[in-house]
Length: 285
Ligand SMILES: [Zn+2]
Ligand SMILES: [Zn+2]
Image (cartoon, rainbow, N blue to C red; front, top):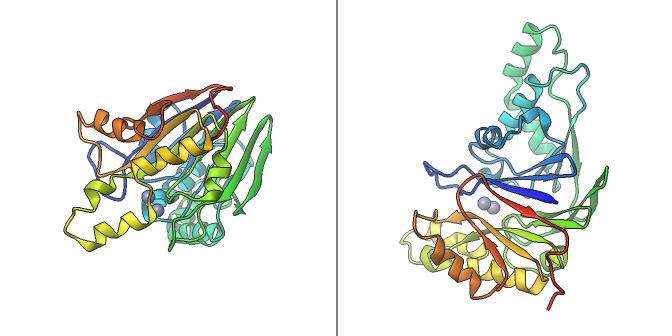
């Protein structure tokens, strides 16, 4: 079984009830944080996970809403790990991840120097291992494998999606993307597909062109549902709601997806959790 928790279901638009994009995947005793948007550590705490318990951090791309609290994750993991010689945190993302992580550690260089000067048992900056990939297997440890493939969020590039597998169960995390063949392939026959979505029918009516621009590189609810159907996944998990789902609107969003995907659809508030068991997919169309 793989457990998926939507830590943050929001978007770049600040929302009092929704943290920024971030998803927790727990499989085989391992804990993966996928993206780290606004408020991620508060939601992670609510899910019962400390920054010092992460097996790896997975990044789909570098839009600010998906990496807003990378620095907090790095620093908090560092200062809350009390074992001697803590292992480096694996950070897996597309090319550019190393530059991003280095820049983040540089931004926190004052903090890092204060803490090393103050605490005898902190002698080095936060240990990290950065791995940059656009496709292929990126993780194989104690029965959990993770594979990545390119997605299409142009002009943002490169961007990747992740497929986590454990003991016959599988979960794909699409990140921000328009429908594309490489995502279809990554998601083929998966137990669940976690997909970011926007309501293009609503966003297209907004007066500001800068807001309407986002329709060009995101999937609508309907498109995410079509991707799920093409790939033959068992459960479609929607997140990253633009605009935020207002209380009472859940059924309207669900109906838009259900018109194109006839199996289980999950959406909701932050901390909504979905159990993904083996054998819930069906043959792809
Ligand atoms: Zn994005
Ligand atoms: Zn986004």
